[in-house]
Image (cartoon, rainbow, N blue to C red):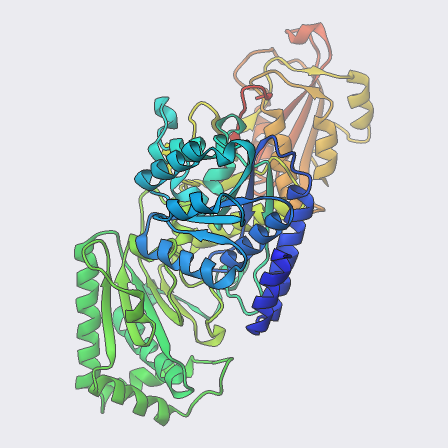
Length: 618
């Protein structure tokens, strides 16, 4: 049986030809580049990176089928620690994948009875009790001692990493996952996520840093980061809360207008998400505000409501249907309000809300952390986002971006958000695009960077001894450098005069200069070079600033290399890499040689995160 071909045919038969093509590309690429040459004696780890809510489940299934075709007999599919999500995933595996022995958490008997006669998929949630049980099952049966294991870890950055790394200990889930993968004769562990920051900042020595990374592009009709947070300008779908007198009323009336348009053309659902805070008391307060504004709409349905609705109606520009006349929209909203066909749902740890409650009709959903990872809201057209944090985390914020997806009408999307918060999201999107560009260019040492004030991920999964931060805007130079050839660097810099304040040069030329520097341990040359590669991955013709000065009588080991004037000059270039090359006289240290000493400054207000391995030059 050809497992991938069978799965793709099923997707095609359902009418999803484009999806089948996308899955085929991902599965064949990863299969041919990383699975086909697997040694079946090693333990390897890889990263599958996709956008939030862009259809990664189908991609995972395609890869599993390809791996089956290439000789893997056993798979574990890991979900987040959520009973409903694990059951949904198990049902989807059973519906989509033919020819496998499919086991849930309580099917150890079926697993043992099958004895890997059929290729086997075990669907487990990342829960310490469940993983301990299955670690024992794998160990006691002995099947895996002579067989390779393929583990697919959905949302791999969420619970799998070691949260006790800085306490010289190992968290339970991380320990049991280690036990399961190392208990097999060999393993391929595929980390799957839309937020790989924590994974990319793991050390190789930890066993959780990917050997390879693959990014799959979203399909047609997907609204993602570049739609909502483009590089320049503010899109029509964004309204800053600072400019709105009564935000909740605007949100409510906007969502009623959108819902009426959707219902009139036969749509089943229109959802509005209100994301104010992690605190449950605040959720209830916002729910009460929504209810109060709905009451205001009823009370003023024949007067003030009409003029407020007209404002929202005028800004609607549906792309997936013809815009209805105002009176038709008004009539449908009136019926919704009079029949009380509008639901206000609070989703948090205190209140359980089944997905069936927001699969139909016009709904307002209010919550905090429960609105994040793994939860999908169909027909989500309106978002009221006010949640802030003193120390925002990029991966957590991005997972709360429930506005991303396929079943949205771009001309009816509306995000109500504070301007500063919008800027944070835009910065996170820029780094996401940088990670994508680095993966697609095949860069191994992927760099993660953020503006000051944003942390890439939670600190308890990053090894303090090995994750360092390079600050943009800071001048770095080696205290005890050497040159592989003083004459070689001199010839390279010959065209550049001391009399010229500075030159604009290609970043590739800056890399060439730095390649002739033998740094001391205090100068992170590899990190600086990989930052340049990061910038080049997005801007292939990227430019930097070069300052050249000769005959500098500077003492070695003093606090500053640059003269006040050169320090000030370099500081005027906020958004470019600045390389200042000083040729010292060698009369005050420097081994008595006329060495070239580099001083590098990265773009301002940016923190670059660097993973330093034990056996790697700092």
